[in-house]
Image 1 (cartoon, rainbow, N blue to C red):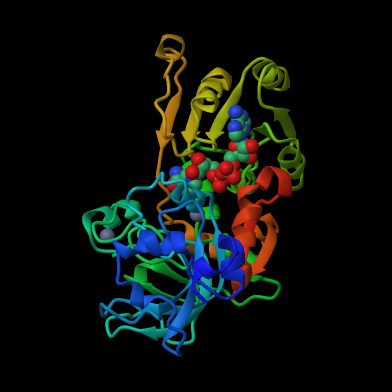
Image 2: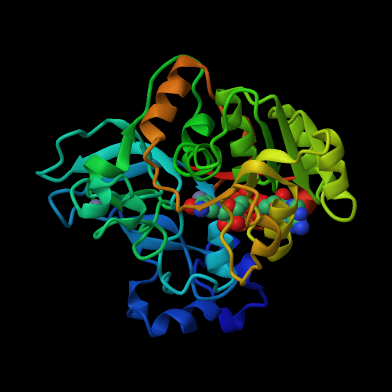
Length: 390
Ligand SMILES: NC(=O)c1ccc[n+]([C@@H]2O[C@H](COP(=O)([O-])OP(=O)(O)OC[C@H]3O[C@@H](n4cnc5c(N)ncnc54)[C@H](O)[C@@H]3O)[C@@H](O)[C@H]2O)c1
Ligand SMILES: [Zn+2]
Ligand SMILES: [Zn+2]
């Protein structure tokens, strides 16, 4: 049946098995030939596709194949939806073109490897890193693979990602991690190693120089902010204050190790000052990405302290050097490099670090629109991390 003969809206159309919605066909016509749609054969797979509109679509796509000898093909078992995927749907990420399979967080089994892949073989269970690393370019050799000359953030951005039954992973040796097989490790624990844990550790906790006995404030209690709360505890700070607008997330933060929570807004600065005896906090981790929260960081940072910016900012922010010039503070920025992922997996293996309980919802592929709807309405649904299970 043609969509025009139906009274179905976009979601009903898809759930009824008519995978491609008219809005998407229109968006895709300029990208690929429309007759590549809906090829339900053994050579095809289900994939979540950015269509140029605000809703992700479930589509039949050709299964990826090895293109470069350094590639691996991974059969996904779990993928996670990230706030960044929502930014793509809002049109905030111009590098991601309509027609791209979404997703940069996933766990799966290698189904084939290119002839130059040395570290992995077919059948290996792996975590896919959000950052692709060639291991050899000048940025990779400096430990900044987020700026890899042939890698960086590719998956679900400039090339097809992992919210699909299969994904092609370029530079497999530098971009996959062998999943440990210790008892009690779940796919939920593993998928947090794709992005949430290395991002919050590298950009937040390590850049912020969390150390034993220090005071820490994490502004923003989303999955990444809570990842910072979890990772901060590896360094024994004496106080971890979590600041958010959302009372439910503040409540949850206590389960992940927050010693204190503060409602963002009027009175927040005074409350942090009261908690820290008037000093402010040694390490402020900004995990929201908006001007008011960056302003808050500057108001609560202690003399000699660090502001570790982790949030992705879309608007200009003010830097109050007229107040901060003599306070010996350090401000850092970073894109996740995922250079700590191997170490994090060792901590997961030993049971010292597990973040699977950040997952609040899991859906199968057929329910992908529900998964996105749940994640989009996080304030109402109390969602933190939402998974797709294959
Ligand atoms: N630097 C990197 O490499 C990198 C990687 C991944 C994510 N990020 C960024 O990290 C940030 C956090 O990611 P996330 O997935 O946890 O996002 P999220 O949207 O789930 O969480 C943001 C939290 O900020 C809170 N918030 C909003 N306004 C606030 C305010 N005025 N005061 C206090 N809290 C407020 C929200 O209630 C929410 O809980 C985002 O900006 C994301 O883009 C950066
Ligand atoms: Zn992510
Ligand atoms: Zn490189």
